[in-house]
Length: 85
Image (tube, rainbow, N blue to C red; front, side, top):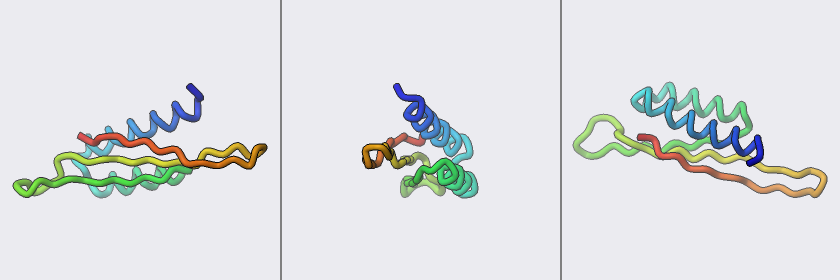
């Protein structure tokens, strides 16, 4: 597996864990989004709060990054989704 892909997947897993460990803190989510942007990634977080709870209990992290091969003028986007439990 390419080292760029490994770093991308590792970042997604670490970010989901970080959000989970913070009990879905808005400040941590914002910091994670800023960290993702600094790495060139786009980060979306969707949280789910059951109607009988005051706080979210789970969510989904979607991380996207552009994959480019300039020599071939090729560009695509890669996406990974992680559950936040």
